[in-house]
Length: 136
Image (cartoon, rainbow, N blue to C red; front, side):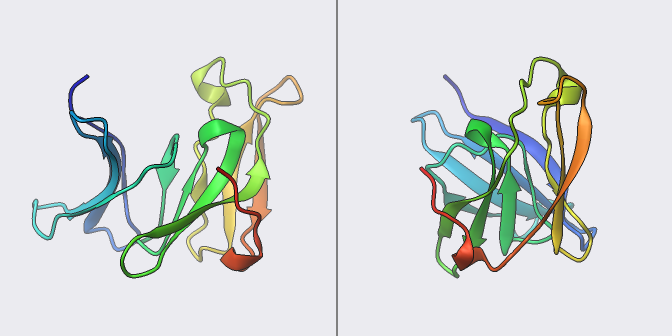
């Protein structure tokens, strides 16, 4: 297995690109870099992320392992994951992948699931991070 970077996305500032990746030794990480390849910052990250998104580096949402999960930056590393919701998606087709996204104010997460048999859009409020259950 080689190095990989994936699920790149723009932060709300329109300057920073967030992403996650894997090193050749299998180590996983979250990262961010300015559009002009300046101010690169990466931090080890052992959890299963799935597709990720964030408005900035303070709170990240992902859809890995059947949950809409959150991680919170504590200044040195990420706390979590914490479960925001179980998405129940089959992920059989690309349209059924949850691909969670924060609203612009960061108060809600929007995601897709086909748990009813059809792809639907769902919205979950984001409570205080510490109030959410910890998950592996």
